[in-house]
Amino acid sequence: MNRMNDLIEGCSLKGRVLFDGADLYAPSVDPVEVRRRIGMVFQQPNPFPKSIYENIAFGARINGYTGDMDELIERSLRQAAVWDECKDKLNESGYSLSGGQQQRLCIARTIAIQPEVILMDEPCSALDPISTLKIEETMHELKKSFTIVIVTHNMQQALRVSDMTAFFNAEAVEGGSGKVGYLVEFNETDMIFNSPSQQATQDYVSGRFG
Image (cartoon, rainbow, N blue to C red; front, side):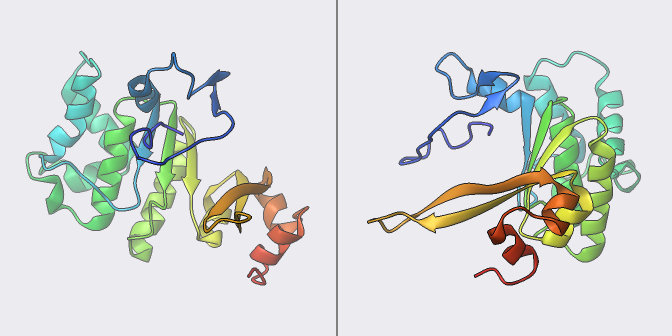
C-alpha cells in the first residue's frame, strides 16, 4: 500500500491500489510522496539509532518542516501517548526505552509528518499485554485524526480496535508451489464477527478454520 516492495526482486502486483482515486502504482506516481502520505509502523519496534528527539525531528526535516520543532516533538509524543515517559530524556537514545515505549516512539515518528493513512503491521506482536493495551488506547485516539490500517492475526485485537474488518485467506496456486491471497469478506467489524456472510469467515471466527 505504500510501495515498500518496489525494489524486492520477484514481487508482482495485479490490479490497482486506489488512494484518493489515483492508482498508487501508476507510472506518474512518486513513491517517495506515497510514503509521506501513507506512514508505516512495523511489527518490531525500529527506532533510529538517534536520540528520542532526533527520531522524530529527522523525518520532519527531510520532508521540509519549517515550524517550531520543539512543539512538533512534544505534540507527536503526546499523540502517541509516550510524552510523560520521554519528556525528561529527549536527548537519550531511542534504544533506552522499553519495547512498548519504542513502538509508541515509532508511532510518534510516523505521525510527525502528518500522513493521511497509518499502516500498522502486527504492531503489538512483540509486546507484553500492558504495552499492547497502551498501543490500542493510542490507536483509538489516533483514529480520530488519521485513517489506520492494521494487519493482525489476533482476532480479539481486531474486534477491540477496528471499525471495519477485512478477512483474507490464501489458497494454493494450481500447478504451482506458492499460495495466492484473496479477500473473503469485508464489512463492519461487528458484522464480521457476529454475522459473517461467508462460511470461511464463520469457520475462522468460531475456531474451526483449517
